[in-house]
Amino acid sequence: MTRVMIADDHAVVRDGLRHILERAGVFEVVGEAADGAQVPRKVRECTPQVLLLDLSMPGRSGLELIRLLRGEHPALRILVLTMHAEEQYIVRAFQAGAAGYLTKESAATELVSAIGQIARGGTYVSQSIATKLASGLKDQTDDLPHLRLSDRELEVYRRLVLGEPITAIATALCVSAKTVSTYKMRLMEKMQMPNEAMLLRYAMRNHLFDDDADL
Image (cartoon, rainbow, N blue to C red; front, top):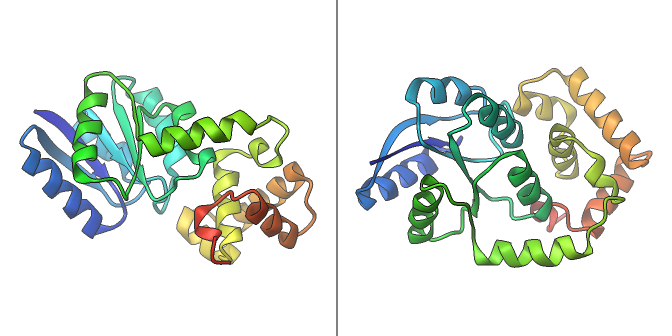
């Protein structure tokens, strides 16, 4: 039995994933985490072989957690399961040390197959994501401003584009409003954009965040 831990801030999602894995008959769900701050402690307590990780939980971001956990638990295999299908998140997740990447739109059978594959030491990415990566990376250059951002700066940028106020971002990321303001200042400097309107136009023009499509 492969020991699996689920990290997602939505109880309904965790329950659904647990049901899928238990029904497969080859996985044991050894623990759950509801926010990013819980994940490192839960991993130490439960010692899973595979971690199903959402990228956008309260507290520490998923990208930060991947780097941290890969450093502390080199044998841990991490499968990202998220709503984010944007290239920059996919690339950053694998650069941080993820072994696989799936969106939450994936079928249960694909999830089971992906976990089994990475538990055996392989990597997994769906065909649709592989196609997106191939087409996106072909045209990408290191000069694009958003590629200069750290993982945390990218998350603050995403939330700013969605219209979240500084205080709400601070609450979601479990940091102070002053810290968020500092991240905002840094990302604007790195991208050489003097105001939020320019940040928004850049994000929409480059399709950075799928969830800004209705803005």
